[in-house]
Image (cartoon, rainbow, N blue to C red; front, side):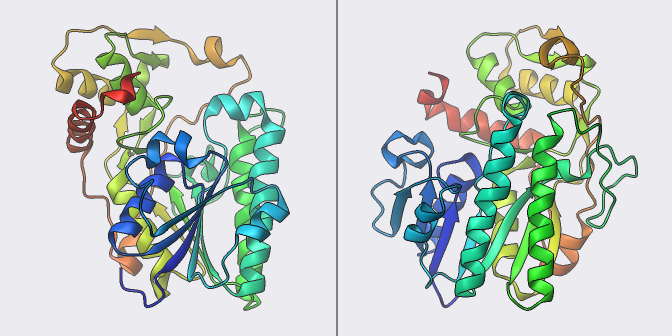
Length: 329
């Protein structure tokens, strides 16, 4: 990444993706202004950079306008907005909190970017497309969501509302932005509530991994290093301005296959818990059976494509855990 202004802002700094982004930025000699709810001394994700003098870390809440105003550095070239609420259980248990954090918090950040003419990279989601049956999903594809009474749609709807905020500001020449939509990111340090991280976590603790509804759901698992490369390209390249990019691998894999791959690579003899989604999340929960992106736009405009296969990525996670056994505590 080549940028004369070596100052950037990262919201959602202590998260899985945010922490990996910060490590990459610091390795390229950027001064990083980081913001998160979690104090840095309590963040295991940032333990490798806690003493880096080029990292300035601030604790705050993006829904608190004063917190964001007091923190914001107008000299930064780019804002990487990764702050969010993640995890299906949170969407179900506290949909109002999800909406408030994503919509109200993002508005606070966007307003300051407009005021100071600061470029913003917004991290959206593949859930934007909902149940759209037309695969692979292109960035201009329709959003096909379920019943608004189903709380799991609070997350994707909130992300879409933020995207709606950005486009008119760009068209009015008030804000430079780009957006990325993540497809099933995985890698070292990820919270073990997602299929790859949870499966590996349980295998190494000699616990049975879970598979829901036979594991027929198809996903395009995308390794964290590929995602970080895409974030940097979308956050710095002129060609990215005013555009949305799918960041996802072009290798669809069903859940049962990915779980079996995790087991095979571990070389452990372990069985699987067969579960039904409706018994875990309730009768009204609506799953997205397939998520398959068309990532050609990211390749054509940015030269980006996912390079790391699921087998390579899973092996990387196992190798990482060998030297970071705290993850299994």
